Image (cartoon, rainbow, N blue to C red; front, side):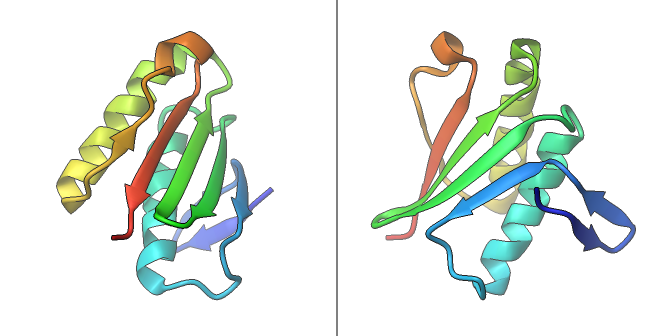
Length: 106
């Protein structure tokens, strides 16, 4: 469980980081905080898994209820469009009720 104080905002959703250094870049940490806030605004009981892969970073979001998949996806797309970040989305979002996307670091 990740508990982060960010100003007056507390993130207490379940976040697991795999393969990321303890001291990561400020940009990556700030992006993760913004992503957590966007997800928590819809479903504070969801879980987020962040995995470092050779070509970038992979994110897997498991909402607590399948009903939240569409609103969380909309929040993620809005956030990344606002930041100018291109996502590689998984094609099996509706089948398994999880959101998988990748951000390329190339």
